[in-house]
Length: 261
Ligand SMILES: Nc1ncnc2c1ncn2[C@@H]1O[C@H](COP(=O)(O)OP(=O)(O)OP(=O)(O)O)[C@@H](O)[C@H]1O
Ligand SMILES: [Mg+2]
Image (cartoon, rainbow, N blue to C red):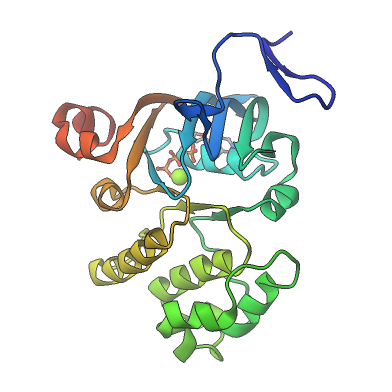
């Protein structure tokens, strides 16, 4: 029997004596991952990851290649693979760990994967319409086009013909078209030229200024840290650091050991 269990519908009972849904003082964290363990088949990858994110905060989730960052994001989004076999995930008082991915999405979790998942055959506008086919919807198309003028110009263009940077904009825009409470970005700068990275950075800054709670995974750790309030570093599926983004920027040893920058 695990020391932490869901008992009927009376809520969770924590027998370990330490609370996992509080961050500071007694205020519950907006988002909380507690002791997540996930597997791909027999491969044990996410090995007891816990962290909190406060409302409106941006958290950088960092670590070397293969540290388990994507697997942690996928566990949070409740994808079937990797399979989360233990742990709890709470977002805005909702038990996400009890949900399948579509339900987690309805409850405000939005994962923008590394490959951006642009759907062939659809224009930019049709891609946004598709994102809004089911309720609850988020930003209106007008609002999206205001924040992403490049997408507005290209609204009738087939989405697969967009440049890499524009596809990343569309992937983020599609997430915002839904009612997002937690935005999960997996390597948003991947494969983009520096000038395009700057453009995406500006978009993410404006999203941050609107108070969107976000977890960002990025190889470009410095760029991610500049945007972030806090940072969690993973190594071999475990949390090895949890603190402010500033602390990571100032701690050369930590960066050399776990980030290779
Ligand atoms: N579908 C899979 N089946 C088996 N093992 C997998 C699968 N996907 C990932 N892994 C393994 O899980 C570990 C963590 O992978 P993950 O993709 O989460 O790392 P990451 O931190 O996102 O790395 P990167 O920075 O390279 O994207 C790696 O050892 C990887 O080989
Ligand atoms: Mg990854």
